[in-house]
Length: 351
Ligand code: PBG
Image: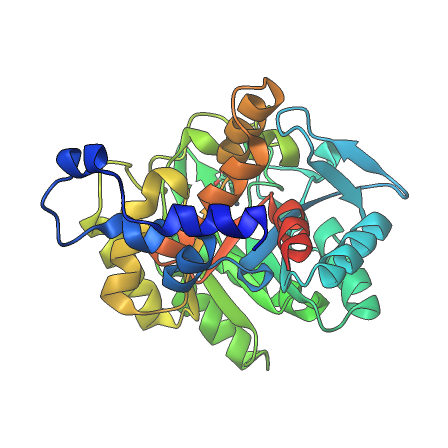
């Protein structure tokens, strides 16, 4: 027998007396299932695949342009032609869908966010360009006014207040414009009351019966959106905060009520946002409704992990994969994450 073989048999022998003395009288030893990689693989309860990922992509004006976003190291804004290349990359990496966010020219932003309903605005041009070349990739488009308003709010502002019903009327038009440009899924991220039902009705009436609605159902007023606002250029313009429409981080039951309403109004999928600090909400929403439930690992979460990794304080790749698996464990069917291409690449290399 080979020396290696002998050594192996040696290892299989019962433990010597000394170890016996120290042994606890245990029948159940959970570590048995964890003792080797093959066993850990068999008992794993959750798995992350590229099928779980939605890649949020920022769009900017210009051609052949990739502009770095300083507060999100590793993330860039793509000009429309480059966004088509990003879509190609997503397809190669088996990422099912992109979510597009425009950085609108400041000169096109105004009080009423009128550029949101321009069928030739930046995000509509990106939707059309990508759909033309890659009709089979899923395209998600945000419905909200913040990339278009001079005050940086998601809705119409009058006397310091965000108007609900007047905003919904504009969002309905925006949703139709996005669907016409090629959005498969519209994602209202504005948190106005009643917008899901109004958008569903308007889409159906306009013939967009197959356009899905991904409702940002439980969206909290969070500081973790800071880097995103840099990326779409609304942090410079935002006056005040969004606490009169986005949810109070103190609340859980309210999230369930918001989700119940959005389901009743016709949402096809629900989203919980932010992600990591809100896994309890994600868990309860999935448990309560059993709906397709997505989590958004938002910009600030990405930047925290990246900042620590770039300082050598965390293993960035491991933190990325562990955080994404945590979403699956908490009940997410899919995850919007800026790590999508990197995670998908890692997953592809592992198989
Ligand atoms: C806009 C919108 C925001 C995000 C997605 N859509 C920002 C906000 O509500 O201020 C945040 C995404 C992120 O932080 O990655 N309505």
